[in-house]
Length: 351
Image (cartoon, rainbow, N blue to C red; front, side):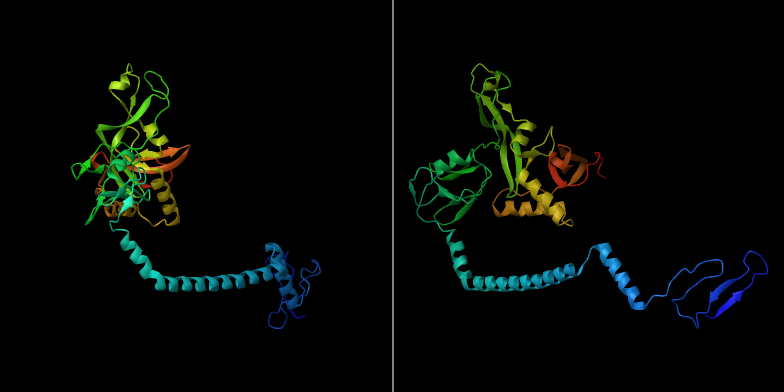
């Protein structure tokens, strides 16, 4: 090996270092001096590459078997994609062949035809109630008896010449042949015991005529009366003046108020759960767009539109068992609006 010898005239410690000549020597060489042993042994290039590949495979536990499995998975994925494309093409063709049948059935669903009441089994020809939530038909009397206690349903009044979409508090009066408005309470579990006389199984659910509530569901908005409980014990103070349902009563019933102390808006658990999953699956979705969807649902069902929200107050968070449920924004006119699911935060003023 040819080397160039460097002598130091400044520091007597470095008497000489053998430096390889890179123009003539191979990169794989023996480096050494009389005082130091050889540091590297000459290795063939192919051996070096095999050694590096083996080290990488061992480090990532990637063997030939793993590579074979990866190739099998890739081929299986291609096969599945082809099968899915073929299946979707067949479904598309089936819809093209049968779309007219489905559209005809959909149009016929709005026709007023002789039917039978689901409850009393009487025959009815017109002015009956078609509930798409129950998927049943009711006469006017049975509809009042059933849907004054079973609310949050989408109902249509099937008349001879047209279809009228009924709100939650609207019912058909057969004697007057008009749509009338009745008091309907928010659906709520009745407490087992009266807080005044402590008598068990003595409370009845009644609508509060003085309190109006807005219930927001996945079907949109429903305008109802607040829930109240009247005691059957004539000597109890809650017999003359029924007590209003409290925030825990609504929460137990699956309805979350915008405020725990003074809210006239309730949100069903399904609305909150759907917003939670929607926000986490599609993070770019805005809360206002979600509310616009609920507004469209209410509009298509003939109910009152959701108001245009103007956020002017406080940010409030609701937690359950230490986990955040929702963030509520205080809005104008004593309304409350679920806006987002996020990390817990201290209430702060909205600019």
